[in-house]
Length: 203
Image (cartoon, rainbow, N blue to C red; front, side):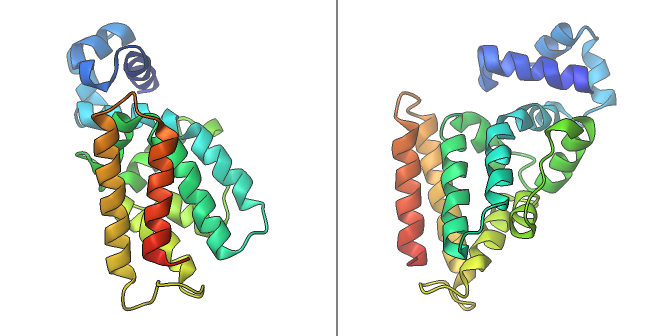
């Protein structure tokens, strides 16, 4: 499994997600095409595991953040800032990860990956850990958003689901826009996302 994951990872780095194929991955790993299906449900499953490496800097930043004594709102926006900094640099990879075929199985994917690559697993505070291992982007965002319930702002029990849906929709729209304009500045997209989140949360 590790050899296939590393082969797919190298090909994604060299040629991009769009050029990936079972044949290329198997050839690079040194196995027959059919061998992949002994270890992975399909190529999409393999791609999810291969792109987990892209979370390294984000997960390390979250681990450092977990040791800091910040307010709920400061932690909330720091997590989102680190996240935006990461995803807008590789929009195709992260659009597929959070909105693709296996985007509702993120907990399972992450647990499977870190069982194979335990050295990459970081330790987090309880809030950040429950967010990081959420089963999909909606659940991840909601767990983080709940930390604002006791802050001054717009987030209340009766509207938190709606605010969460708006944030996820903004993220999806911006990621799709960035996929169509790879030359655009990732920082600009991150700033736009943070401004949208500040606006809807009122924090």
